[in-house]
Image (cartoon, rainbow, N blue to C red; front, side, top):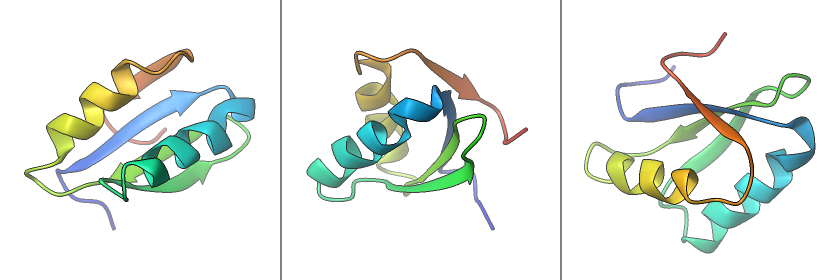
Length: 72
């Protein structure tokens, strides 16, 4: 379902919608999918050439965010 360009992150459940809205504002540079709402695990599906940009954007958000190698 997910390929190497998918960026997995964990945020506080209250921040899930915020991350989704930010990515929407970037004209869907990456499409956010909730993997586990209760634990705040998200998959941001990007392309091979946009995954680095997605990581940079997420890293600069003013929320606590943990990058994951894969969903847990």
